[in-house]
Image (cartoon, rainbow, N blue to C red; front, side):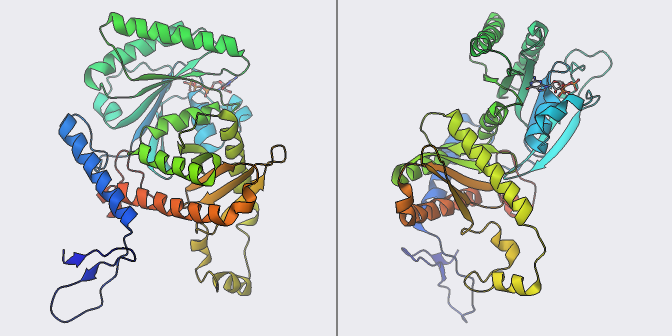
Length: 411
Ligand SMILES: Nc1nc2c(ncn2[C@@H]2O[C@H](COP(=O)(O)OP(=O)(O)OP(=O)(O)O)[C@@H](O)[C@H]2O)c(=O)[nH]1
């Protein structure tokens, strides 16, 4: 490439001889260049360390998108989870869902593209005399296996089936993350929930260590569709699919430090899953309030954001100082909102990053006076987040091909 980079205000200029033709000028900030370098170094290091065993997170997955499998006993709540999280079905309406008869495949297009496969509870794919399943087609490109256990029912059979599944998978697909949702914990006391979690964990770990398997990648979550716990659990599952999550977290941690935020989340606005947060301890109450705030903004947008405007009105909105078509302004960097929590006087701010992602933060008391500085810092982080996703996007995505595993490309 015949180009050179220059410090700040840096331009990649054409230095070749010959008749000068106008060429597009690309501005690359030192921070973006640095991020690019770190990203490449990490990738090379991983490749050297684990050879062919570790999938290259940027490698295009030619066959499809990362997949979340929902498995478990009949009526354990798999379809309800998928409908509430990904289709915004009100939890009370899941009472009317019919039993799933065949594998339900859902393709979801969000900040990253992935699939959710809902398996019928009555089918045991490892012990089914009527069918033989193509295991590679099911588990080959899997992002995570989510095993749902009904905590309000007798769970011994569910745990036994889960053990058999882990043992089968461990042989051929040892890297699969197994996420156990101990589900329907609403209505159970806190102590009883923890007792169940302890009991299930011990039963699984004992069985696995009897079979000589130590440190299998199995994680446990207490969930219910009637509160935020199901979104919190899905957030943890999805975060494992994001390459260089640590860098996203570091950006949010720095933002919290410089702006004195209490907590910051990067939300996928459609699902209310948070894909990253800063490194302060987890706090369910903060997540709930930020997630409700995202809901309010979406409701507002649905009510006020889509009315038809007269030509004159549209021209005014598209004119100076924005000078942009209205459609492109929806996720523009000036779109922001703020709200003050009446009880603690702590403002919440929301800033759109792109049409799928929003940065939501809870500020400290008295932060309103410092809004100009805070806005400047937020601008920089939003720019950094946009660069992050642009750089970690797989080459195929940029070329219009299918996105690879853990390649959260934005469109
Ligand atoms: N109390 C409570 N009930 C739930 C919860 N999640 C799901 N349910 C109920 O559990 C019942 C079964 O839910 P489904 O989603 O149909 O279960 P499934 O696992 O898809 O069942 P199959 O399709 O037969 O495999 C429904 O009546 C839901 O309302 C929850 O978190 N708490």
